[in-house]
Image 1 (cartoon, one colour):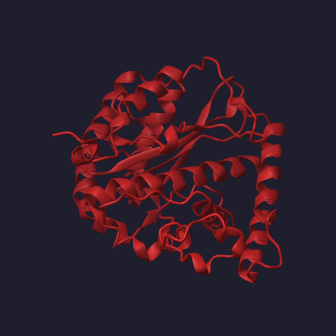
Image 2 (image 1 turned 90 degrees about the vertical axis):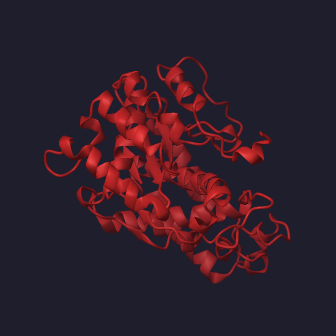
Length: 336
């Protein structure tokens, strides 16, 4: 996982910042990273390849070779030009209060504890870290959903273990770890019970089932949202994300690779990368859940209408989405 952009309101009317992730099956990781090292060796000046320094032809070459593997790229972005400080503060206050709004003494003490900690941490975040935090939560939850559906049809054994590598762009590694532990994981955990994961009939979930939360183990306030199905109690996000490291990107080809793909997305939408560089990027993605936009808008209340109108990146984003791969295998699409 990596991030790109400042997540602060810009001087320009529109400016996209984003968080991106690349999912690589363990069985293919060695070959993919070796090919990446070979492809990019001539481009390296100090041992690390940065997407912001690559040409359209170089980026297109990276996208093409990644497309030969069963890897998935996804991204969630935000147009900071549509978000003034007042909007961000209102959204931050609302999200912070919502963490503990439904909690009572009937909840288990551990849930009360993380709720209190999460609310305090979220209220204390700087506006740009808060926005990045929310975008990351949206990306992780949507990506886990699409990745499980994608790989359970193709490589179900890959769903038994998850290894996360996050580029440490915050001031310190400790700050990033605290954000994950105190804010992102608790919020994502709750979201997974209110909006349970979609599963696919006839697929092998035996490798993934150890991550399900038993309904009877949930607080009554959350259990009321789910059915009696063992798959409807949400997932243990802390177990899925237990193996998380914050390594040096210069020594981690996967982080350099996601940096290139994320840079291509942001440069494309911000008008600083020619179409030759990003035209095939959508082939590394699947469609989003419920056709949600990859560009998030922070609404100050649930009934607020999303902004409409022409944006300089509308055509680019539509072209990327038009090429996304089908999450279903050919036989499940009903084709011969």
